[in-house]
Length: 524
Image 1 (cartoon, rainbow, N blue to C red):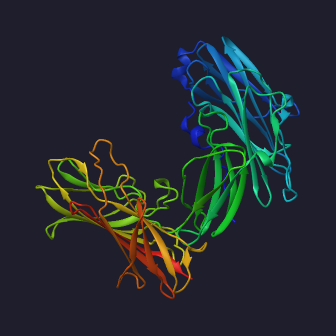
Image 2 (cartoon, rainbow, N blue to C red):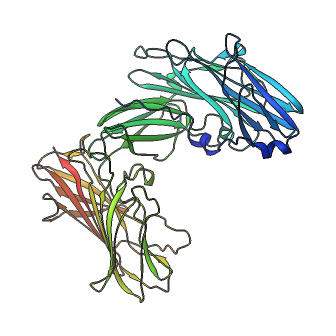
Image 3 (cartoon, helix red, strand yellow):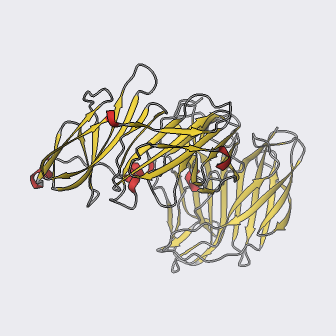
């Protein structure tokens, strides 16, 4: 099992780096503030205090008990008063005060005034132990994104407190999670910090997210899935996260959540503990009683976004997103090493080997001197030094072969395609039955590119598909028929091994796109 580091307060919370004021700022100050923080037994507790200027949103950090020089004005002082105990996660008390700084000002955040965050659920018998609660106190009036100005903590119910404050300049938000055979997750926010923080929830009023995490496609077998709160208008619950399940793939997991907008996510970990992949699929807006399936790791992984571009008398290509989970999109593509070749009439214009591992700015560019038909090929393999890939990893290599007409005097995205393959009937390890037949849904797509480059509509005239059972040495044509805006290919599977898939897409002008995914799915 993977034990995750809590990520409940990353995201927009981390978007604003606190400002520690030095001597230069102090010279312009006309006041000062000292914040004392007391624990639940009345003794002083050392902590870090976040101070936010209400008028500007400027943020400062200072150690409790230390005086900080500030311009005169209205501020919000916030802190997590964290106290250790012999067992568990200790005790956390969140508190905030609105204070007017004029001259030498002092305030106290007293954890003895904190009220326990109490949450209830008509929980099933399999739920054991108290819920885990992630909570935030936010400066609500300084920005359209109040969670960027916050302090937070997470703890078990009974060990998390918050100091009530009715000021409308504050927000309070929390996420509570009960764990059993399924997870039960509730979020709630209030303006001000209520005198009785918490709430009661019913399972019948929840929506359901069923995670289906398949095996074989990822760079590692340990995978964790989670849900983050994503209200349409950011508030003090934004990006609070519930870790639903983490284990070796394949597996399924179910979470029941309060209605609202949720961001699914997955994180992939190597055997040495390195975080090697993960991403964020589309946000889900869920209603009470609704049930949705969120897949991760379905075959086939391949290119997700970038196409060749003619710009400033050169052909450009960005080697990003060449092998990724199509259910997640460009946020879940793996690092690759690729060889890119541009040629014209059989003559190589330029050849270059690239990698986007540790180099997000890698790109291929080749000057072209005349209009004509060009061929751009890409041969990409997953590349992640420091880890050992699982034996039999699928979608390990992808090749692209684009043939298109280009004019150095006209900037445009090349009129070529990417192919999405989606086999049906595979098991949770992305395996088809031996000697069976698999229907593969095939889509010819063109993702949006650089907005400064002309992006024309191109229609696929013909689509062909082949399969290989010997790693690409020999190929067999599949039967292909049109199905709505896509195509369906019927592939006859071998008795063992793995299946590679190849597509060819042509338009009426003769532009051609050939894409191959090796070890697209397995036989088992």
